[in-house]
Amino acid sequence: SIPLGYFGGIGLASRNGILFKGSNFLDVMTQIDTVVMDKTGTLTEGVFKVREIVSDGISEKELLQKTAALESHSTHPIALAIVEKAKGEVADNIAVSDVEEIAGHGLKGKIGVDEILVGNTKLLRSFGIDYPKEIDTIVFTTVVVAIGKKYAGHIVISDQIKPDAKDAIAKLHALGIKTVMLSGDKENVAAEVAKEIGIETAYGNLLPEGKVEKVQDLKNQNRRLAFVGDGINDAPVVALADAGIAMGGLGSDATIETADIVIQNDQPSKIVSAIRAGKITKTIVW
Ligand code: ADP
Ligand code: MG
Image (cartoon, rainbow, N blue to C red):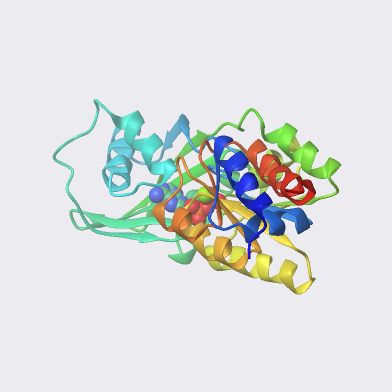
């Protein structure tokens, strides 16, 4: 039988915008010693803005239009920013075919006879295409473009850290909980964001299976983990964690479906509230 306190805890949490999919997860949250988080959309807004466009061999306008034409096939937050930037300047006559989304890398397609690649430097490297070395030192998310097997330019974009992220991390640390960030973004962007928020350990450049490996490593060390994520690629790690938490507002359906706990308004501080709901439930005697 389920103690009545659990119903109180679930109700309390739901009034706070935290959906527990089972009363057992209230208890699990009180045992968590490590909170692992995704970066984009979890600790940052997941709303990117274009900062700079650099083209090589073609005009900036053509670079943006062709990139946006391909990105219009993706729902990734990066894609939304590029399509938004190109708005009003979209050339309807750019027909893209053979579009393929390559997880953790970006997109591949064809415009006319030319292959077009849009994504991170890992994507270009995997196709054996060279790019200027300076790109690796940019401390913002950078989308690199290759057209016809040749580097054609890059688009620098940036995201914003959520207002309550730093405070949420400080509160987790005050509870003696360790924090880890896992990101598919560049190593130096991941490190910079982690430093700004106060996260202890950050890993960048991770493919979806790399995130799974890191979480499995922590589990093998007998850590009790909560994982908080929002993207399609986060579903496997959400499933693997002792408590899988999804950001429900911007989150992908697969991740919300897999999660044990859903944070409806996407605020990182609700991770702390979820732990608190578990602790309150334990101390209430009905
Ligand atoms: P994260 O949410 O941590 O950024 P993802 O797996 O969603 O992880 O993406 C990893 C990286 O792959 C992104 O940071 C980006 O460099 C690249 N990427 C993925 N999808 C796209 C896209 N549609 N356009 C450009 N780059 C992309
Ligand atoms: Mg994400």
